[in-house]
Image 1 (spheres, rainbow, N blue to C red):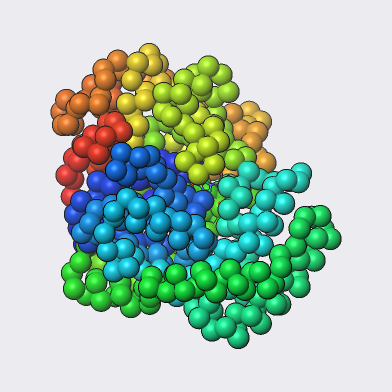
Image 2: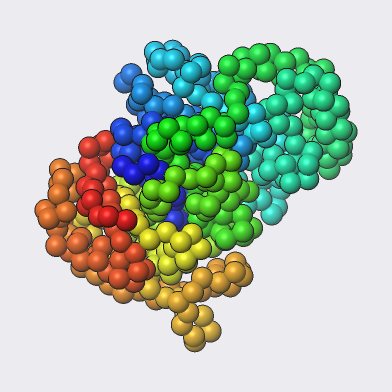
Length: 428
Ligand code: IMP
């Protein structure tokens, strides 16, 4: 791998990034997260037991790799410590020396989770993961946030908390009619948490700077996808962070290595969890088939994912706003056995055809996809390890995708297994 690889989802998350991250982690020295929080999720098998990690990069399962969590990530310390317990119990070694969380990270605390859940319980919710992500990022922007560094300055922490609780408890009690947060219980809980977290809290920007200087290989692991970016996604049906590759530098306080591959991951069809426009959604048995064959249920919330055909208008847009040119295509195996595959190449609305992605989400909701039909393939892909052995109709499907989006497929994942990846070894 080059010295840096940035992995970015090009759709609405759940593109199978974890699989590609795992592929590169074999060679990476460090896996670093730079945005989002425990709204993400990777399902892993640790010592024969299925485990889902939401915050700590799955690279932690490779004993040679270090894992960094940059300041752009919002951290729920309780979730972090639960994951530490799971990893310790499974015998994963040397966690204190291999995991670093930035002291600049904003905390997700109880009132963020209560507010997220209370808002989602009302009309106008957008289908969030209810993990407190949005409220924590709001506090960061309004400069009310509690940061990890504050946990180690009792006086500052208490003052900030007091200010916050006056406002948050008013909202929780008077507006949302749910239970407020008790200051004393909160302080006690978080002083215990602070103690346990201490060995992991570091100056991640500095550590990363040194590692990059020393020629170490870094994998920058994005969460969610471009269409969930707070500005460039289908606003307001988005997450609260930037999911673009430029966030990798911002969210870690780092200059990326000169030799960095920006790899966008795209599922061979499209899925989405939560509300919001989805022009190629299939609400029929074809959609059900993709869901059951592709195991399309959220790793974080267990919600069934909405499924639909590949949307090249959305993909072209994601590539445009991210500058990404190189693709990793996942889950083509799920399409095996479907006679005819539809691919969206434009949208139609009011008698006009569009090939761009509109900012007005309500308009996107009304747009009808224009499809081109491509012949499917029947072969099981799971054991194919060379691009030359791929079914010819799959190769044509990938060429069509490349041509219509002016991009290049570098990796193809052909099944769930760790080894089911074809690297076309194209220069970038
Ligand atoms: P939040 O990030 O919990 O605020 O949720 C905002 C939107 O992003 C909702 O539609 C979620 O379903 C979606 N979302 C957040 N994280 C992920 C993810 O990791 N995969 C897919 N969708 C996500």
